[in-house]
Amino acid sequence: MRLLGKALTFDDVLLVPAFSQVLPKDTSLATRLSRNITLNLPLVSAAMDTVTEARLAIAIAQEGGMGIVHKNLTAQQQAAEVAKVKRYESGVLRDPVVITPTHSVRQVMALSDQLGISGFPVVDGGKVVGIVTGRDLRFETRYDVPVSEIMTQREKLITVPDGTTLADAKALLNKYKLERLLVINNDWELKGLITVKDITKQTSFPNAARDPSGRLRVGAAVGVGDGTEERVEALVRAGVDAIVVDTAHGHSAGVIERVRWVKKNYPQVDVIGGNIATGDAARALADVGADAVKVGIGPGSICTTRHDAGGADRA
Image (cartoon, rainbow, N blue to C red; front, side, top):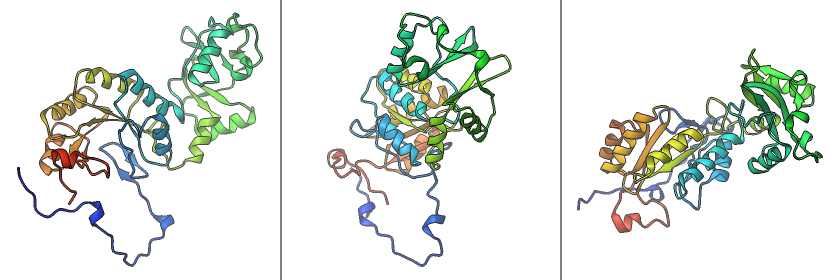
């Protein structure tokens, strides 16, 4: 066993107040979490099953931080939690849930209850032919008729082209007293959906951590065991921003190889490796493509890792 010299952790350090000309309102807490992700609030929630699922991830992302959804779920359940965060708010929702004209009213009502969505673009042969909203369904009793009989027809739709600013969209929504706008191209192909709720959320939380499409940021933890590759694939399909290869001892062959595999197969997703406590470990993970490292082994007040397996303080 190798014994380190004197070391400090957070509880051992105090900051000495000094003269400042900077006012609190002029400060920025923005920081880079990883190579491609910047947070307006330097706060990331733990990937623990009693801490982070979609509800907390949404709340912390709205304030500027990011949640890491824990891995003590099936791959499908974890991906569903990630999808809830990515769909919660968006400047332009690029993959809205759509229905066809032959869907029955009963089917659409069930889908609305299942997903918590009140409006569905109606698409036929890749072209927008109408929209069904909560107002169309609210008092409808003909449950077995196709939605083509109750939807707002294409000729009556108010739509916008791709590239419309949120300010222009807001003006149209207000002018026509609408709750949503379909984004289409010249061939009536659906390119997105803009809603009043999303615009309101964007203005209510100006410091939220968002991706380039305006969706909230969210990460997800994975391990190194069987089924991890399928789990990562499901998380990437759900839109995850960062994969955290999360173990008690990150300076290990399994973690290093998993970080390498994720970065090779999904280069568009940032990969974070950990937990680690030494410079050699950070270098080993960086060498295989890690976009960030997770530093600290057992620093939590209730964590027993340092007592049971060893660790190191931060400085």
